[in-house]
Image (cartoon, rainbow, N blue to C red; front, side, top):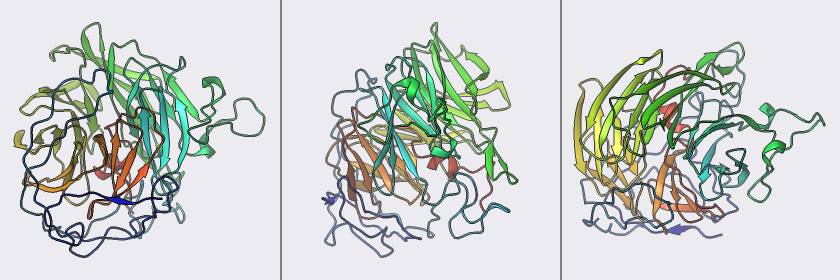
Length: 455
């Protein structure tokens, strides 16, 4: 197995915290060691300066088969690293007391420190892959619509660990992450479910699918779980909802779905926003579970109240957005070659040209990671480019796992797990036209807090 290192990095200091996870991968990793706690310039030598490059294209997804732009990041002053990071688990901070009465692991699926997955949509195959972020083994692959079509692109992971995946051409599907939650539909005493990429079960035979809700949208992109409510007696997340949006008869519709049943609870049309073809393109939730949604290439940023869908606010995006995210800083980010940072408290924007490209996610160390070629890290306070790492292929989306690693999803057959301090990466192979740049690990939802105790 081959651990590669291709990095162009500015000088930085990173302080590590806890175990950075195992690298005993079977799909392209032989390195070991976690996120270093010492000062590093990536390869032990003098760091190479980042160079200026062209802005990324702002076109739509199209068929999503072409390689991305070869952008490079602008050089910037290094981040001083700040306070040691907290590495989040799904339900509580490791090494802190678990929620009362929930036993050693914090209770439920999310309390298991070994339970961490990234869910990657295989758009060209109409499936979604469940990949263990620590072992790098793909543990399941599932169709996302009954007709084995749909072109899935966005995945969202809830605090219970389960995934909701949206199909571009309509349809929302939930899969259980933990086999204990799956249902023995045929009554034979065992759970029939996929165990990897080569045994995708027929739709009717897969017993880890929780529900599917069809939509007749011409475009359905965003999907985002709410936090739900913590039940200490059951050691479980309850009453979690799923947001999604789509274009219906030329108008944007926003929908709130019951996370347990898939039943549509509420919906509202948003006629003030020009739908175009895509409608809203990205979505994420804040501490209160309110939906924030952005549009591709500019347009409108929206916040919709979880408790009253008719209560929503709109702002004009000054920076074109491919991806969008919220994180522990409390800011809302729209990301592409330029990044827009919206402060909900002051309702003001800050923008910067950073040389990114598409998806983005904030980590726990004050860095916004933006996909592209290279993958770049931007200081959330100054919007200065602090890190710039080349991966073998252009990556469309990024995510952060619960051990602090940054993931990049290519449009080839690979996903990369990258150490943010060094640029060292491991490779997951065997994906099929992957395309995801949403909260595919659940880290972003966990990092904004709300609803779930932290120990």
